Length: 80
Image (cartoon, rainbow, N blue to C red):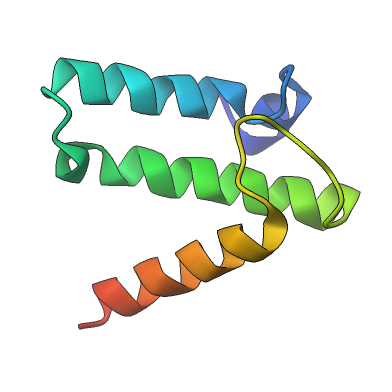
């Protein structure tokens, strides 16, 4: 599914959050094995806030300001 489809889920981005949980379970909770799925969730959540504004809510997404901080930290980690 693409971002547009995942934004229509109830709650928005929920399929991506579920994919992270499945990955963690499958990989004995080794977070490093699921980083791509975390990035995918953040991409969906970022699209949610861009489309609906920073006051949009989804149980699957961190608040907009925390999301932006996490995305910035992840970008900095990958450029080291």
